[in-house]
Length: 282
Image: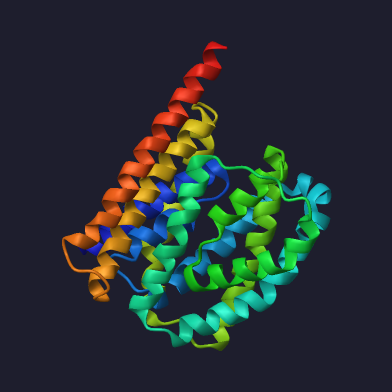
């Protein structure tokens, strides 16, 4: 078994555990690490096939909350359709190195926004539905990641826990299914992609129930925040590395990006735990 396979097994197991606990996070944790070994064009088709099953499962267990949220998320789902078509074509046309750069560059600020806990409810929710959904569709079909921006939006809008999970899973079922079909017509499925599945599927089957079990015994917010720190550091490293590969920055100066991410995240962690301690004493 190669180093790449071992790495993929470990990171997908960890990511599936997070997904089982929080209802999202599989791709946003898997992709930054896996892109250190594979290109988007090989990795994405395998992850989309797996995510179809994961998202359908999460939607099924949260199906009772769907009647309360489907009207709110319908504009997002409609916007996802053209976004997926555009993003899938971008994946088909753009060089792998620039796709990696796009993935890391978009993901990093989204993670840090979540980590900062910024919440500013949007009054005109219907007005932003279509353009936001379209952006999500592009992002997902290029990177297989949409959890962080959706989590930021739904947290801002004050969704209850079960409604949050139902809304997230409903949109992700739509985007993963549409992306899977678009990949098929663009001929993006390959032998290299399907060869990743034996390393991913067992990790998912074990990790999701483990995460569901663990979250009932640990503080969800602390667990979520630690996972975001791991994600931010990996994305910072990946962005530094791909900037060197694309000759945008020279080594070791490029790793200043990673250093800035670490300093920012440590500062945000300090405030998170300080506020948690203050809340527990009040």
